[in-house]
Image 1 (cartoon, rainbow, N blue to C red):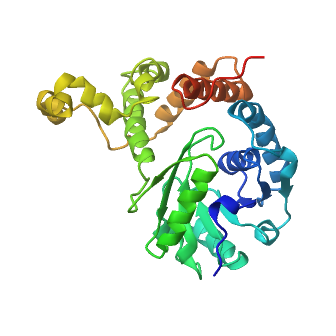
Image 2: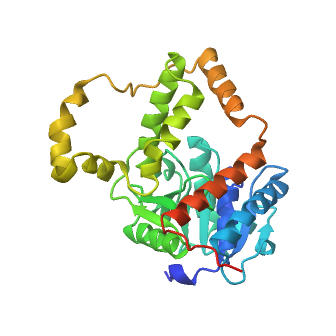
Length: 319
């Protein structure tokens, strides 16, 4: 088996072109790749081109690779056509386990056996998804964050039947396309970042359900509080600083007893009609007159500004 080196990949296939798959498509195009895309939806071609067009202004600010162009996108009529010449496959189908199992098996059958196939799943372990594939050793999780063309992080992990070379290859490839990669040693449901997000999300739902805080209160508590620190320093190191010169040891000695206090409710609340309505109405109030495209543009520009402010993206050149 002759595997293409990660840095020599030139053609990528994106299977599934919704929000995540479309974001991946935009990212790979911006990095100068030829991209073939397939999705069973009848409007998939139009949809993914809209996603790419919406993302392109932000990608221009991030810096395009030589030869990068939306014109290097090809929409194919079949899954087999999409992966026929692909040197890497990114699967981004809906989060349905049966669908994932069948699609990954189909991708495995249609793709050359030296090509790594990565799933964008946000929660399923690869062990649970690779059960129907004839060659599961090259199947990995490459879990991105929305939007994939803008947020650097990708979590990479294999399943019980995945060969280590495939995990290492995928990690090297994602780094070659400008991603910040966490290569996990073992499977954890929800991976790392999603588990942390989920804890915050569940507590937010509890507070709305109990009338303890509004959607606007919760969002402001992060954007005006710890979120400012988390943009460049994670929660563990942030807490270590809370211990002063004594660091994490002093912080744990001082605040460790508070771990016994009822400060969180990690069990998810029942998502009944009232809570669902409160969340929907609260987000609508927060959005105000801004439509979806405006909010996407604001989010993208905000992330770019943070990346620049924290030195992870060069400042724009002055004319």
